[in-house]
Image (cartoon, rainbow, N blue to C red; front, top):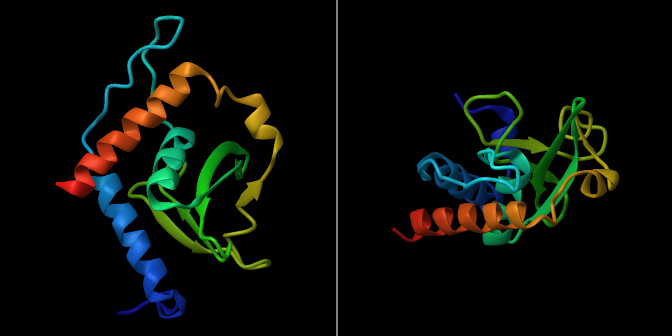
Length: 143
């Protein structure tokens, strides 16, 4: 059975979503090293959204999913949310219609500019982690 929403997704967006899904599912676990306090760095949505956004040329959006800090991707026209690492959800990624007023794309996913100032996105450990994730994804995509 074909869900109604699938009939509204353009072929290029569906192809992009499937490529991202394959990349996320096929990347092996990555050792991101340790932070400056000597603690193991844990993969998170902020890192993976930036790595995938870089590879696939998508806009990274920082904000909140429900009440959790979160990062996700949007298509250039902002119509579609691609969440490569959804909060407490398995499996991922998710593709949502994000037109204004359409649930859950604009209700659950709330953008905020303050998040980028609150989290250490510019730290050397964070940037190194994004590079490692992107490299692993590219290796998976290129075989």
